[in-house]
Amino acid sequence: MDKEKINILQQLHQIQKKATPLVFSALLTILLIEIFLQLYYRIQNNCWLSERTASSFKIPYADKVADRRQYTLRAGFQDKVQGITIDERSFRVVPHSPSSGKIQIVNLGDSVPYGVGVRDEETYPSQLYTILRKESDETVVINAGVPSYNMRQSIDRFKLDVVKFYKSPQLVTLQAANDISLLSWYREFWNLDITWASIRFNILPKDYNLATIFYTQVVYGSLVASASPKMTTRNYEKYPSSKMVNAVKFELSNFIRFCQARNIRVILMPVDPFYYQIDNTEKNSSLPLYYKNKLYVEAWKEMIDEYNNMIIEISNSNSNSVYFLDTRKIMDKEDRSKMYVDFIHYSPAGNQKIAQRLFSFMKEKHILTHN
Image (cartoon, rainbow, N blue to C red; front, side, top):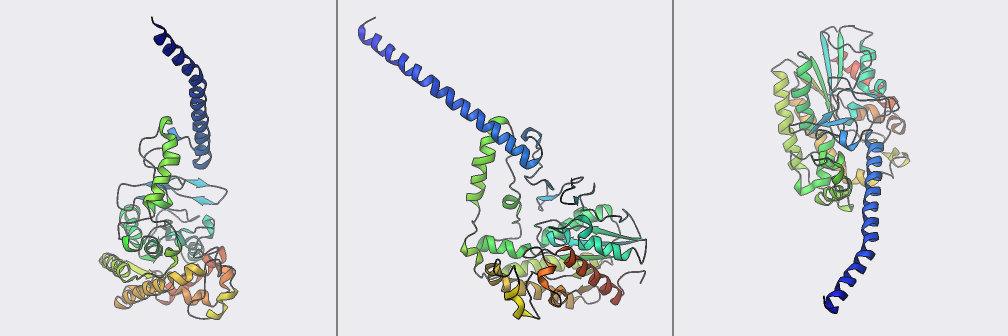
């Protein structure tokens, strides 16, 4: 073997000696990162990555479904600290409400009827049941709200989940606001098929294993974020809402006909944020939440007003079976700072106020059969 070949081999040997510790260090670093991410995933999701199925979301109380809603509540979930219980039918528990009864009242919609920020017994469906059971022991109240649902998801929830277990509901209350926030986020890209699933619930890839944990936790998360419009000052600007409102009106009108064909009465409730809207508007600047959310208020007010006017129009057009309960007037008489926990979710006191007014409204309109 000539000297040139010997020199090359010696150089390769030296490179190998230097590279081996670097390769080992890189592999060790990857292993440590993987262990860290596994532990992080376990803490965040209360299960190991290997235990996670393709039908699960990152958050603990929602599961993926194979229909256009994309997700629903996780049956059997419980968080004792926050006071959240989801029953085996995937509805948030209304404590003490029976599973069957002659009078079935369904509270349908998004995180407002669901009761984000309050415990099971503090939601307005639960507080409504507490009042109703003093009148009759034949009443069932179903909390069918799902956080982040828009109007169409809420309607699909009724048709796919509620009627599966409750065959003869007499009354549905409906309150859903997420079409407005979705429009603000997606703007010209908005359509009825868009939900908050990919952003708010961070749906992960189907194939989970240790070799892809870094990808699923870091790279994929970055791709999801970059593939969706980012929250910028543009999202706080006014945006024309007529297209969205007309699309939602079509969905809601079809749902009204669905209910009328089954003799189900409907109480529509407006999008009702924390600030004074009809009366006492001069008090808005004194609300603790006002300046924190001022950008939202200015960007969404016209959209909210147009959306609410559409709901009022539908109730007026179907006055024999559809009612409009104007929660704005109720809350405008109160200290709104005590009625809300954030931009739109009621505090325990706010939920109690809504439940009391729902009960008196049902009695006034002779909606319940035992009245």
